[in-house]
Image (spheres, rainbow, N blue to C red):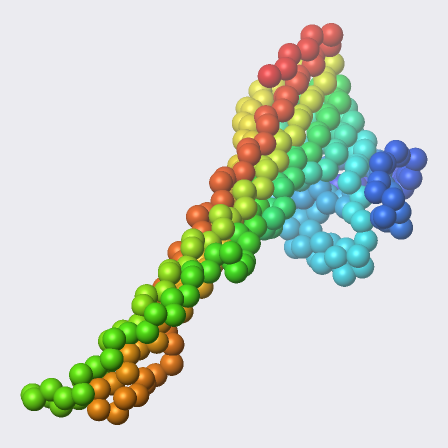
Length: 308
């Protein structure tokens, strides 16, 4: 695979800004506020799958390494990036994945050779019992735009719902203490007879239903503003995140004790310990979660604005 062509000049500048407003839980006051990063490049060419993550545009290998290091450091990622550059080119086969981040691109010339900008890859799903993330917000301001650009706005699918609650005593079947009939003391053919079975315990009740699947994420939004349209053709696809599948049903209740077996004929003994009725069936799966919502794509050329 061809290496990503990243043409940066000495103009590269990184500014970390904490002047942003965040509403936070008082119990998590020790978490630092999210940062906004601003960078200035001469030009950037995307020729393969690239990721915007932690304020950087990274190839897949670097992205995975950055994720690992951030996780180990227990650090909060930079979620917002302002990118200023002369020319942005997305080649055919090039994909920029933005995730749930906020990306603002200011460029003199925007060129797309059937490239793609997307929020999440297809079928990306949140972990169990977590809502799917909303797609990010993408703003492009350019003097001119040319070429075909595939814009895929996709929310992350919701995670699987919680398993149904564990069965409590209320789901257990009732015990039956009725003893079985005693066996005859003698049978001319086979000798002593076994005692009869005890009364049947009540089967356990069905387990609790699984939890509802988690909510799917919204698609995210995209806006491009240009002074001159040199033949720009956006192809827009929107896929709201699917609601998660319902959680597994909980286990059924324990079956009640069966009554003791009747005494055997000759020995006048009741052999073996008590048995139980069958356990209840597993609970039903939970209901699917709610899907996310589709958000806007807007194109502004001069003073003309169109959104869908």
